[in-house]
Length: 333
Image (cartoon, rainbow, N blue to C red; front, side, top):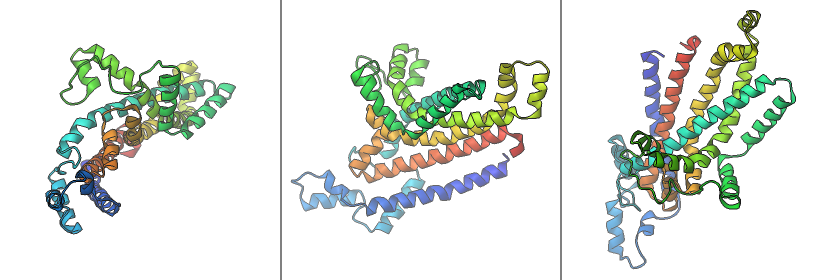
């Protein structure tokens, strides 16, 4: 991807973010209820309510509020959370790393599981194993990630308690990550006990997120492998005496990965969005859990900051996927 194409994609990102900002701002103010009324107690005086409305800018007209918010957002400042009384940027910065780690772990699981299923289906192509795997992937795709989470909580946390289903690590452990990345920082600091505990707690939430994507990844990779295996150079490799596994690993898989990896990269943004319900189910202190609390409490500054963060991540990941896809596929250059 040339510099001009990259500049064009970045130029389109600005109006996209602006559109998201406008839609979120308008919809939140059209929603019923008064966030200021939720902040004050039953004994609050009209003066107290008026002071709070002036503090958060709700005493001004909606266009004036939007101009103020636009200026603050452009400067990277979304104001203070109404319920948590903290800067929104700092709250997002504190909770986003766990969401990114959970999403990255789910993506890795999806690629490994989906790749294994696709390779097994191709290896036993035309047999009962392939048909069974096709049925399984179709079934897994139809079930949303949060339902897998509920099933895990019921069977693996209640009926057969073999996995933790709440929290990030054992209560007996004490660990304060500098940048919020618990898995990465505990590993780098040599705290293998913290790393193992956090990975143990994140296993089923990440697996719940990864299962639908793993099924889609398997189906796309299998279809791509079928197409690649029909090419002439595959026949030449077989004539040279390569075994079936050598043809599959050395010749076919490398050329068939591009469509599946593109799907995985694009779906990574949906994994980040899917953490909203998963984090709430498993009590994980990530951005998604905080987003639900912000919606329940009608914390407008926090909701706007979280939604714009998700929008920025979506655009950034899609741009990165396009660049990687171009590097992997010379035909697109």
